Length: 246
Picture 1 (tube, rainbow, N blue to C red):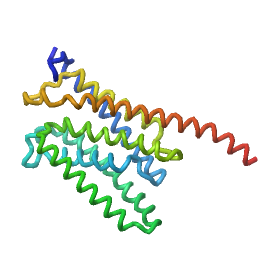
Picture 2 (picture 1 turned 90 degrees about the horizontal axis):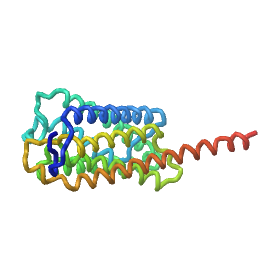
Picture 3 (picture 1 turned 60 degrees about the horizontal axis):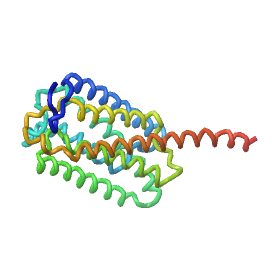
């Protein structure tokens, strides 16, 4: 049995690869569902702050291996990883385009389109540069630290959106479950799997991530609960609407 961080006995690399692979499939399915949801309802399916953070991470992981900081990323020859990050960047990028398009339409109706674009692109620039700076300053190998932070921001954004607006429809319950289960598998693989790292100092720098994982999972399933309540409310309201229209 291999050792992983804090000298805990970890499961095999095969377990790690399989678990992360299934997690990736679930998260990709959720992203595809978000894209369809956005086009169908003329909206965007991810909170802006989390959307910008996640897209920044995806884009950095596509271009990072070809930068002067390539030692922080997977090798350039690992085309499978490059393709997976590229697919993530594409799907999240479409959701971001939906945010700019449909959010811009609402801003245009409110007479604030110029301000909307100024805030969106300036914030995205600051977030992207901040994430890149974090990776370089902390020598965050394989985005092992910044990626969980981005997922935490996404999870917190969904819960906040549902709490701030009781009428907010949000995503479907199916997408909420896909996001939650994907993170369960991803975080479980990191905690239980063989996380051997070629850089010895990494062993001492990941303590706070386990706490971050726990909080993110709690937020994921709080949102599952919120989506469940919303669905039940919609089902209860539907018969009343029908009766009232007769």
